[in-house]
Picture 1 (cartoon, rainbow, N blue to C red):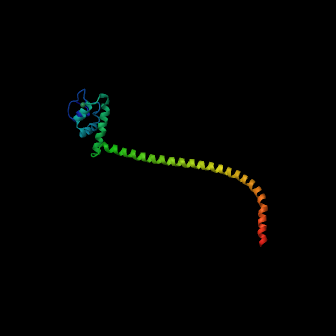
Picture 2: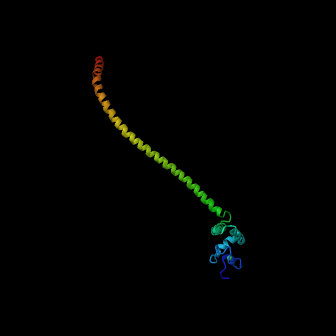
Picture 3: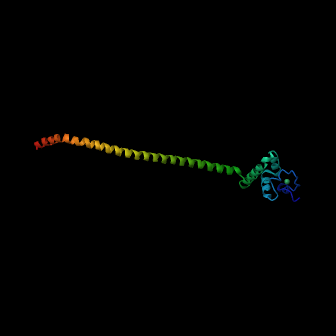
Length: 161
Ligand SMILES: [Zn+2]
């Protein structure tokens, strides 16, 4: 009887060669079967495994064990407690991500604006310089042109003093 699986050992029965539990609940891990037995009942676990195609039974046994552990640790929420905690973390992270994306967009806009402004400043400096040349050219001729009349006006006013 030393070759019994953990389930058959726990249930104090003979372990048949085609035991549904044996591949998933080895004798060297009695806690694994004890957990699912405590939450679902050993015979229910056997029935659940029987309804699942053999190639998926290992996964099913693993998740039943995980769910049972969660239910033992958290009798109120079980694995739903883990799911809702992770779901909340995802939601918080998505909010944080969208805030960071907004900040990145804002910084990109600032950089583009700064680039545009520095281009504008260079252009306006060039423009201002060329305008200055034009103005200088204009003003020199304007000074030459207006100076006599201004002098005349000044002289005219000074006549009254
Ligand atoms: Zn067995």
